[in-house]
Each structure stands twice: as C-alpha cells, then as structure tokens.
Image (tube, rainbow, N blue to C red):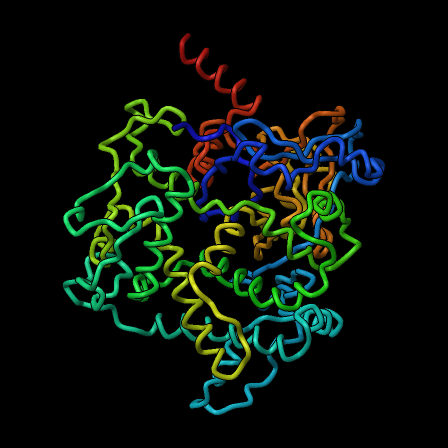
Length: 514
C-alpha cells in the first residue's frame, strides 16, 4: 500500500513523527465538507477559499476567485498551545511574545503557598510567564476563571514534578525489563482476548492467531489498537518510560486542550454536526475570537490508524541501496500482529515501539492528573479521551517561531531586514490551529505563514488562479530534493511528489545518467 504523495496535515515541529493521512471517500465525510455551493454563500472578498476533497490526499484549500500576491487568504487562532521547555521563561504564555535576553516579569504561579508535604507543594514548579498583566488576566478568563486556571496550573506543575522525580530516579536493573520503559511487574499478567470483528471472542486454542494489518479495515484495526491500549492502561505499561522533550511539549499541549474543554464547550454556538456550520466555523477570521472553536478540532480526522499503519510500513522498509522507498518499498519479512494480547507479548514485540511514545506521554499525564485531582476538580482521564486529542493534535501542530514569519525565498528574506535565515529562527513552542489544517504541502508553496501574536495569517506569495489549490511548506525548502524528501518521509511518512520535486528529481536522474 503506497503512501499518498502529499500529506493533508499541518506543520509538525522537528522530531515528532506522523503519517500521511489515509483519506475516506468523500461520501463518508460529506457532512464535514465546504462545497463550492456552500462557499457561494460567503463573501469571497473576505474569505476567498473553500475546502474540497482531493483523491488520495484528503482535503485541501482551494481558491474561489483569483488571488493576488501578498493577499491574506486566511487567518486562524490557536485552540491549544505549549511553550518549549528551553524558552518557558522567555516566551509569554498567552501572546507568544519572545525575549531571548531576559525573562518576562509575571509568573503564572507567583507563590508556593504550601509546605513540602502538601499535595500542592509542587505548584511552583511550573515556570510559565506572561509579558503583561493583560495577558495574564486574559489567559485566566479564557480558561473559565481562577478556579479552572488553578486546576490547569496544578496539572502542569504535576507534570514538572513527575519529570523531576524521573530524572532523579536510578535506572532499574530488573532483568525482566527487556525494553526501555517497561514495567517489570506486568510481565506474565492475564491476557486480553480481543473480540474478532466485534462479534466473538477468540477461543483458547486460537492464542497463536495473527494477522496482517493491511488485511483489516480501519475500524477493525482501531478495535485492535484499543485492545492494546486497554492492556497498557490496565497493567501500567510504559509507566517507567519518560518521553523526550518534543513529546513532553505535546503532552502539555494536550493538557491545555483538556483543561480548556469545559471553558469552551458552553459557548460555541451552533450544532457542530451540521455541514453548514463548518462553513461558518472555518470562515471565522482571527479577529472574531482569541481561541479557535473547540468543535473545530473534532472535525479533524483522528489519524491513529494511519500513524500505526505507516509505522509498520516504515519498520519493513529495506535500505535505499536495495531500491526501497516509501512509495516503492523493498520489504523484509512482513510484521504480523497477534489477536491474543498479553502485557509481556506487547512489551517484547517489535511493534511495541509504535505505542511507546504515546504510552509514555499518557502515563506522565495520568500521574500528573491524579496528583492535581487531589485538590482540584478535573474530569475523568482515560486512554480513549487522551488518544482522541493526541492523534488529532500531533499531526496538525504548527511551530511557534521567532521571528514569527515563514520566509522561504532568499530575496524576500533580504528585503525583510530580519537579519536571520529560515533555519536560524528560534522554535519557542507549538500550537494547534484546527481551522488551518487543510493546507497541504508543496516544496514550491504559493502561500506563506506569518504570525501576529497569537493569530496565524496565510498570505499568497504569487498570483493564484481561481480553482487552484493553496499550499504551504511543512518546513524548510532550501535543501536538495533528496534531503527534503528524506525529512518528509521521516516525519510524515510520505514521499513528496510536488511539481518541484518531480522536476528536480528528473534533472538529477538525467545528470546522473550522463
């Protein structure tokens, strides 16, 4: 099964791996489309784009009229965000203002009010800051008031506490811990018998039954993945695995999203299931609200099964020297998956790496959640709720960069007087802009991104004809075609087939042939 040539995802910070989206047929998602007929009800002078399905590539933004160079075609506000651990004291938590020389003056948590033995004693461990009292007060209001803000801070502080505790913990020497992050006490516990096709449970003599994941529909594979997660949750698998800094930022973003849910769900207008409402939702300009509509995230398809399928394909790829590529892989022995699940089988399998990062993030968040819930009102957190956000946000996150512009061409960069190159910008965090995830990738994009505080603006960098698709770049485009494609394969599991890549690949092949 070949991966799509172009992903239908947003920007992903370097180091986080995702898959190209596997797209349902248009009829299966018709209620979530903005069709040309619907877009006719919009003022194209203010909203000159619509969403269409593209065969093999998901959904994309298309021009509904001719667009001139330098025209802002779309603006979006974030729904959730997380500041980098390295720049937490230098970046305003609300407006993303960055000061590399000195930290901002207002701390998210000014005073540690309790003793070291109190469940809230870690409240001052979170080092987030604000650049002004206005940003501080706006953030509290956006979270639904002081009580809910305190709950959110307690959750973030709980995560910091768990991270520090893990860093001071001695590594386990238990011989049963055969893979990083495994919990030795879970080895050999009772198995999970997965229901087959949702109808019957496997008999005891079927314990060796396995399957090729490509033989399952997405619904069937999702059922199997949920059973793996049941085992992970029930037996505390990956509880000793601490995610890397990139995954921890994603976990903070998820914490932000979950704590915002209550504050956002009560005032978000019309029925999210109505197709016409999507037109209204996506057409909202950045000036209409300071946080994106909550429902927008759940109009984005969860890509959990796509990530897992791509991860399995990636494990089976042979070396490039043998002719392997994402689009035409040279495979090793196919990876087959068991119907009969035990903790030890999961932990010792090659495919467990597909769950390790998410499992470690869930374990970290769960521990912090339980700690914060001792004193604060928090809802129930289970793996289904976590995954529902994780696999929507991971593949659709936009980097927060300083300077806050997406300058791709040397001539434009020289004229901008920013004094830095594209690769010299500082990454200070990332955020989810759920109404902007329909920009597909091209290495010759016709749209650039510029951030104004929290608002992300998408500006045409050349003339775009009516009916033409609008593209952004998923990273730097200054590298050679082989390097660009390699990075996209590593991070997004697709081999770019944009016009520029095809043309440059043809030149390379012609030159090599001579």
